[in-house]
Image (tube, rainbow, N blue to C red; front, side):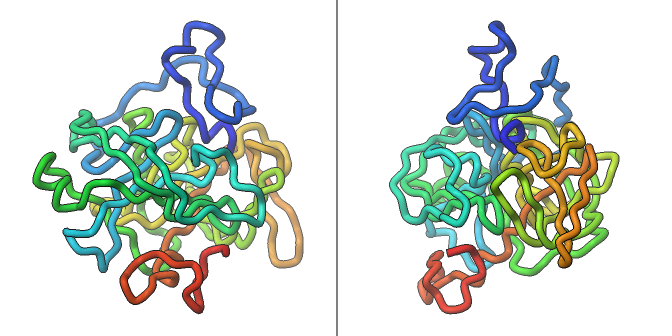
Length: 282
């Protein structure tokens, strides 16, 4: 996960090709930058962070006049990893994001006003509120957001994982759902496991949306892959079944659930973890 989190900053690439962010990640670093693969993927609404990937998102119930949102990983939160068993909610933020058009060209810099929610418990998600509305973004940049699916995805769905940090995409399908995914001290539930080959994600792809192929519907958020075949260590997640049995495989990659957001909407269609029945960790 830590390697998944933070890509290479170009200002440091000439030194030791160390990944860089706060905190510094562990794990291997790509020996060379991967090629870009933009022709087969639609990057409209994809964003890049300084250390991760993300996407411009709306709810199925969002209005054009609502302030827009950006989705990325909890481990991409600028305040550092949220501790296990904790979450961040309604905290001021001025983080900025590069917004892409369909061909992965930057058309704008968007700015957050707050972190609506961030956690690395149960899922691995940060949701930012922006200073611009969906209508502002469409009028000024002709960019449509992705829509977060309100229902649980299913095995066999074909998905694209599209990285704004690397300007490249990956294609595979949902192979299985993992009851508990453990990585060092962090656990996620009902994780999406990728089929292979196809989604061999790397550092910097953290926070990329898992998009239902041929649509602008997001069914999960990419966050980690087992890099070295180790058991339950950072960068090497393991699967834990209902009986506590542990399995792990080098090259198995995962995304985390996002549809739980819909269980936490209040009467004003705003994210509120105090809503009865909210399924996000709180």
